[in-house]
Amino acid sequence: MSIWNCTKLITIMISTIALVACNEAPENTEELRLPISINEVMASLINHSADPIWIAAWNNPTNDRDWRELEHLARQLQVGGSLLSIPGTGPADEAWTQRNEWQEYSEQLSAAAARAVNAARSQDIELISRAGDEIVDICESCHIDFKPDLPTMNIFGELSPTAER
Ligand code: HEC
Image 1 (cartoon, helix red, strand yellow):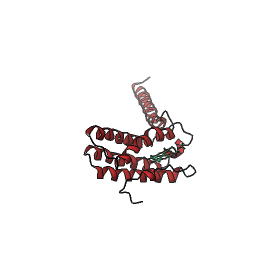
Image 2 (cartoon, rainbow, N blue to C red):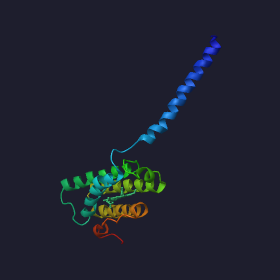
Image 3 (tube, rainbow, N blue to C red):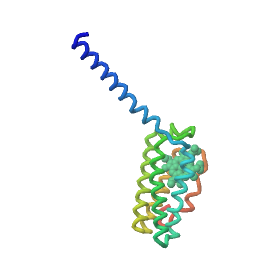
Image 4 (cartoon, helix red, strand yellow):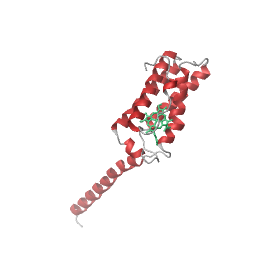
């Protein structure tokens, strides 16, 4: 084989490897999957971490330890919101997460929870209450869009006193 042919062959081989490598990246992203269903994320992480934020708006934390606990829960909700963007094992998870609106709700929830984290850090009841109202709006909007045939959970009863509705 001449040097010229050999160079060509190597070029083809490198291109092939590059193509294979490029093809793998999107597949790996698609395979990103939660080990549980979105419904389980909702019950065990989202609902669990959001409740105390609403409750804190009128049953105010009284010491550093309680505020710290609230900050941790708000962090869990922030991460939980982002996790909603990834499908899990539920039958409808894939269809939901492919929708733009779903991705937007997921981002909004995470961002509102991040504001609750800051509110808890500065031990500010007014800000906790405002973040709580934003959060409840996002839960409700997404449930209305994506969960119409299931009964809406009774979160209105837990709205903070500053809520408009
Ligand atoms: C991105 C959309 C979205 C957001 C945001 C969202 N949910 Fe959900 N939630 C759903 C869907 C869809 C289901 C139904 C899942 C199923 O049936 O598999 C659900 C189910 C639930 C459930 C399970 C019980 C039931 O009624 O079916 C609870 C509890 C819940 N959500 C609470 C919340 C709370 C609290 C928030 C806000 C802090 C929230 N969700 C935010 C989409 C969302």
